[in-house]
Image (cartoon, rainbow, N blue to C red; front, side, top):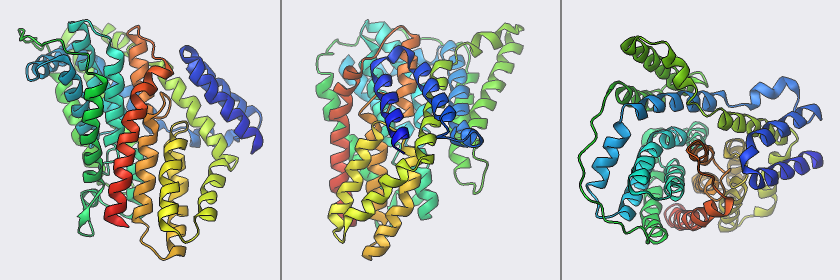
Length: 421
């Protein structure tokens, strides 16, 4: 366990320092975890979340077709025509991304909305980095709002037997949807302050003409299917990934037939960010390694030992420790490990576990907004910026991420306690 912890800490320090080679660092560390025997070879594939990887690859490819169709430019035209200046355009775009993310995976949301932000930044010649960061943060925040918004929500729903509507109203009380939306409302003021200098007025311009509506239709089909399959029990674990990848292949075939040119396949396959896929693959294996070594399990048991019979204390510890931990590690194995522990603590104390479940969900989901590597959506957003020639410093990300996260977490922490204690 000590070796796993040491290697894990070194890995994440290097990831924060050497951002341009993070995929090599993550994959190299993953290889060490296997070579040193911390993660058995037989469990490598079990540790990798192929559903996430397939979903990212498929959506990235579909988004490349979406961008080529000029639809992001049209959406940017429509958005900027409804707001007075660039500041409000950025805030509106972040809120728009958050709304989508409540019903669709965060990574897919980032891949769909970021191209619109890039179009706006190019039009007004402003740095797209803060805009893209705001979109990723808002996407992560709203991922906890519904059953289908984030993998952590899906884990909670399955373990606590909650359905889609339970996230809206549960036991006659407001569910996570309204708790998250209250936090999202408060973050508007944070974003308005952070982007207060972007006062460039927006002048009406001629709207872009879309050249191909097929990618947009495929994206809408993707959204509908991702929501629809969330109601199907016992479905294959890679269902969402197959949907995204399958629709990308359909889009490629239609585009190739339309243009009568097979080079379409090569062109759009190159648009997939393989560095981001490599980074996530390495991180999945590293997390699998520390899970196998018992690190996450030990942390989970720690809560049960120090909580005692003080509900407020254990609720506070679970919420804020989850925030800190999720800023640096993938929240999926952490949440999966903590759910039975939280239930055990609640049973011992004789209380309804829902308040602890919601504290865990809010802390683990929102904590990923503190650092660039705390959530897959953040990694994906930074990968897109890198392809556009923009580097993102950790300090630059945290300058936006910390105030955003504190506002959202503190509001959720207070509201959950007031409603469910």
